[in-house]
Image (cartoon, rainbow, N blue to C red; front, side, top):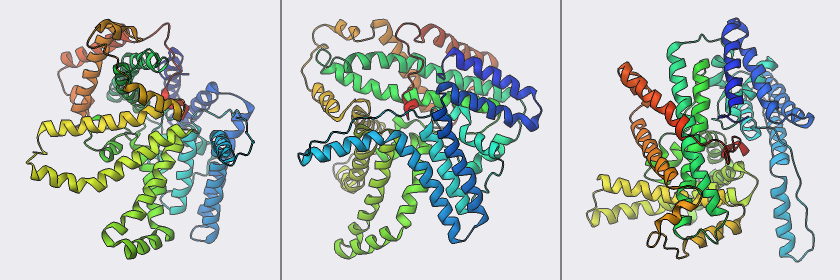
Length: 509
């Protein structure tokens, strides 16, 4: 059930109508029923039901035990056990093939003729999201930042709240507890603002992301014909496709939750205006980065192993450089886990993990030298031109990494990179050849104008909510913009042949 499908629209309307007409005390039950329906509608089987029950019972039972034996050794044991059960199931369902592929490579290195076949696992929609959410729940109960939920049905609602299962954002129990279980009134202001955000998300997906996808699929599907300049355009458009697909789905999710009265954390803040990769990741998939910092990076930095390594490295390499080695090790572990979380393939580990780690380390190491060079040759780093250069550099570095994110294998990723350097002078000879790669001239015009609108809105959002600014305008102007958005979706949205309503890129994670 795609977020932009008619079925999902009907499902949400029905769920919201029931939610707002039943007594406030039982409105959370409507959300639970809607979430369970949505969860199993997408992938219903006895096996997937068991998956969800295992995660739910692990979090529910161990959460209560952690709190019962708070500040004792048993509390820590129960926390570790609960986390290990959830992680074990996640690894079994998502990463079995990654281990089998790795084992095959290792055996081949030693000329051992053992080839493990790949296995098929049916995992429930959103398993990566709700697994990490429930792990953080156990850790927060252990840390004492929240109390365990003793009503198993309410615990199930926190785990399965239906809008976030497709794409996130990652939520914390302490921030969701009140909103989820407290019945909310339907407010006109929340309804209008929520609908506008939903429309903006649908516009991103149907008008921009789908068009980018047609071009990218055509080029990457035939690199022998479409290479050189075609590949360069495809690499750039894939990054925009990924962003509009992911952030568009988040906008729909946030809009639905806003109508209900549930506040979710923002997941994007105009990432393409970032001047460095470090800043980029503060603005891209914010809640995943926050989760990994709080539950992986900071605990690693405080661990006895890293503390001892820190002392040894300072003694060997000096205080200035020595302290960076343990820091980089913790970062490497965190970024590798980010890559692994995105999927059980080495392409994800390279794209979302290793390359991002390398970029950030190089920024840290080369940053001081770069500042000195800029001062020496008199470059004004506050000028618009320099900030534009930084934003373009960051965008291109991220786009390069996303080659492997889109690639079917490491070899395919290398093939895409090689195809960039094939001489294919369509710009110099016949411009019409560009309009044979999945999009015609009309579609390209719509796409370019839509991307410009996207960047304008993202630019405006850097100084505050665009919706808040819109709703402060006069009613004629406000509704003119809203109707323009509606008609843009209806007229320029991609439907019909070739449209895959289930093709949410982040749905697979």
